[in-house]
Each structure stands twice: as structure tokens, then as C-alpha cells.
Amino acid sequence: MQEEVTKHTKKIYGSMKNTKHTLGEKAKEIIIEIFIIVFAVTLSISLHSWSEHRHQQEEVSVFLGNLKNDLKDDIKSIDIEKEGYQKSNIGYEKILALTTLQLDSIYKSNNTVNFPIYSHASRINTGNFEGFKSSGKIGYIEDEQLKQKILNYYQRVAPTINEVDRIYNDFLFKCFDEMIENADKPEEKMYSDAKFKKTIYFLVKIGKNNIRVYDKNVKPEANELIKEIEKTMNK
Image (cartoon, rainbow, N blue to C red):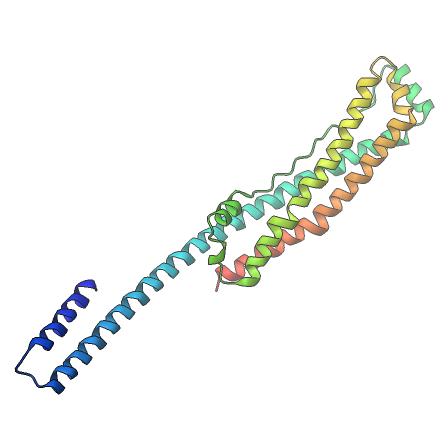
């Protein structure tokens, strides 16, 4: 394309120097050559823009495909963590229901109380999103509604999982601290202690709240985002 422009530029110069042509003929030839140059340059820019846009949309397509897989993995992780909360809560509620007499009976028969241990750390996959965003390519997504949903999920919705898990783990570690502090006392005394039972009570409450956050907030948003991505990729 550059060669074409150069060739026609030389023609313009040649026409201007050609003494055999009248002024009108020269002007006509120059106008035609200028038109050809402008057309060639415009076509070149258009082709370059089209090629660049096509490349950008190919990158978006790959990104959305990877994001869809990440979201499916997120949902699996959420379901695993939710099951962990449910099982732990059942165990803690059994402990809370034990009376002093029942605890004495358990330890007199050389049995122990099962204390569930499940430290939660949901794995939300953010690598693809963070990489695409930090490279400045998030603007390549032309569907503004989809782009906003992606940003909302990764910047507002998904981080709530880490926050609620952290609060839960803090209370779990408080139970561990209580166990360590009362290591020299009979376990039945610790499990009947009002402070220890209150800590377990709040552990159950937080666990139920976290299940609600998973089920009502994060998981529906992930499923909705998957649907929006599929809709965009199938256009």
C-alpha cells in the first residue's frame, strides 16, 4: 500500500513538470492522483483498524472462555465449602446440646467429644480476570452490560467469600485458643464452660450466615455471569 502511495505521488510530481499538458489537464490529473492517494491511505487505515479490532475480539473470546471455566470451578469450590460448613455445624450443634450429665457420662466411659475442624478457604479463580484487567484489555469487551457484570462479580461479589471465611476462621481459632488455655483441665469442664459454648454458638451462627452468602449472593451471580458469557459467545 505504501508503494502505491509513493507511485501516485511521483505521478503528481511528473504531471506538474509535464509541459505538454495544459494547466487544466495538469489540474485534472493531480486531482485524480490525490483522490487515489487519499483512497489508498483511507483503505489502508480501515484494513489496519479492522485487523486490530478482529484481533482484540479474538482475545476477548479466549478470555471469556477461560472466565467461564473459572466460574464453573468457583461454583464447585463453593459447593464443597458449603458442605463443609453444614457438616461442621451439625457437629457443633451436637456439642451445644450436650448437658453436664451427658458430658460426665461420656468421659467416665472413656469416650471423647468430636470437635469438627474445618478451616475454610474458598478458592475463587481471579488470575484470568486480573491479568486481562491489568493489561488494559477489559475495554475490548464491547458488551457494556457484560463488562459491568464481570467487574461487579470480581471486584464486589467474589471478595465477600474471603471476608466471611476469614471471620469464621477467626472464631474457630478462638475455640482452639480456649482448648489450649484449658489443656490442664478435664475436657468435660471445658465443653460445659459458658464462654466456650458461646464461642461455638457464634461459630454455628456465622457458618449459617456464610452458607447464605454462598447460596444467595455469590453462587447466583456466578451462574448468571456464565449465562451472559454464553449468550455473548454464541452471537
